[in-house]
Length: 169
Image 1 (cartoon, rainbow, N blue to C red):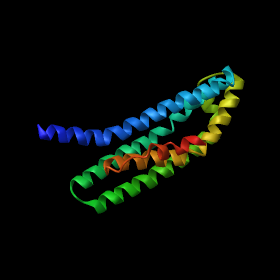
Image 2: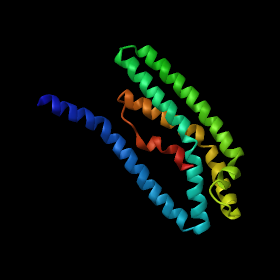
Image 3: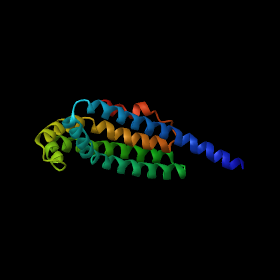
Image 4: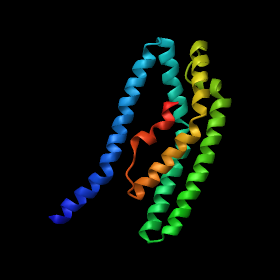
């Protein structure tokens, strides 16, 4: 019975910060959408479609985060902290570099990406401006994804305010 309580405490120790982070993110998205909605239907359409186009750029960081989580966890499980640090550093560096490249692609091909979703010239133009602004945040956002995944493996408390900083720009 004591093992179950200990397991529950460990689960809550890891899950609660993640749940708070996700709840904060969801609430922030609701507030942000409400703010954009006051700008009119063209702005909200451009915002929604730009978010969908930008979401494609998160996949590489998520892949590196999964790789980092797996490799670091295996290394820590075999009690090789030095190998865990090397895996973490390599995944963070490569993932950040890849997200920088995704930001460049997002910037250069913003109108093309927006045209996949709509033919409305106003929405494409406005959405392209949004994507080009977002392109500069991609390296920081990718880094936050990678570092937070690595932090979860190491049981470092996650600061959801820091994790959301790239989205403030």
